[in-house]
Image 1 (cartoon, one colour):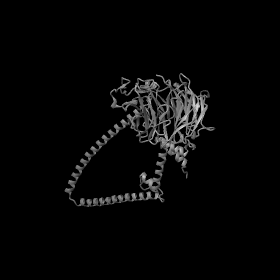
Image 2: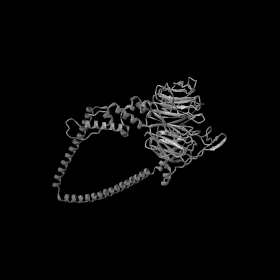
Image 3: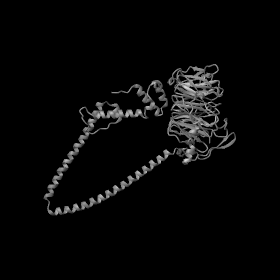
Image 4: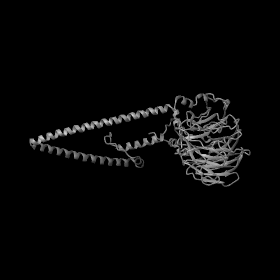
Length: 600
């Protein structure tokens, strides 16, 4: 008999964790079990494979328990068992349970038979009595029979009427089901009806909010109406045509990170194939079709020889402020710095586990890395060596972000957030309040407010002046994976627009928050699966969101609806805008990137 191997079982558990949204648990299992080294083709494994496998096993045990050794065919009643009984008891115990069930059933049947015999005896007695009765009584009986027949006929008519009523009800239900099916078909045909769900306004905030900013009274945005247009012309206008899309092919594994150079037309991507790539994207309109010519892409190999070595997965990347250097972080615990020509300039080695997050400071003299080894390290780029290692966390460091050129925040699976400063041996601030893994931390454009999001289904806003959070944002229904600040408000290029925080969640929504009041402004409901990434356009007027449902939506924050949408062939891990705001890049699970022209 064929048996399942530990490798196959580990892979099924790994896929189950991924499908259920337990990404960190999936990563840990994948890393420790060496999932990357197994030869199983993930494309052949259907969704829910582990659940199906377990259910089949339970059904087999149930069948085995119902069949005794001398059963030629199962002519006895099949007894259904509870899953917990099947798991906790062996076959012999299960068979004993079934025997007892069958005995009880047989006893009930015997009782019914005895009752039937008694009834037959009573009938025979009645017949004997009938023979002895006189003719008058027979006449009375005949009258009674006639009355009974009339009553029976009346009851029959009532039953018939009730049956007709039930038939009518069933017919109505069938019509309703047909109507529902037709409506669902129409919805499937009309992706633009996402606009029906575009922006659900928080009903509590229907009044315009007045705020004082720099002495000027600014009226907050009024709640957005729910767009209900679903004409064919609107649909066609919403879907980004293939002529405005450039597909970048070349990676041989999922593309998990992408970033535009802040100064030029270079796009960097990082993949599970042990490479990063720098793509030169021509200015102007995109060219449709694939673009994989060696003239416009540089391959940055993180391992000599063959690729797809999972210990060299490129997990994160970031450009310096001048756009002259690209830093990459990898599963092997090393950070690497590359030139725009694809030359490896520096390899930074000290971490003892995969690097999850990596950021340049604004000045560009320090690089900050956060690792699974529970530490964060500041690297002196010019000296090509580590300057200081911070080991305050008790779990893997998931994210890092600079506040200014010398201080930064770190978050971890240990639920904690620490604000650290170069030269200080203790955190300068500790933020405790989350009750789950803290997936992301981001400073606002002024460096005064810190936003965080967690598996505890909340996002929080913190301020260095106080220990407790300023706002506790609790409108999501599942884990929050990413947060981003809008490039608006004081200290930005868009000072007259209010500062907004966006959060992306496994509940398939993106939510926008009023930072001053700590209240929900809008809920963007257009995706069908977890949203992994959000990005504001440079002018702060649009928001791009990418989801595992393979679609990227671009939302107009003024109009309150999806204005552009694109559907690829794999889940989307990250989206990002170029500095001009006329191109958006998205990286996909099917080994590709897409660059989309954006113009209104």
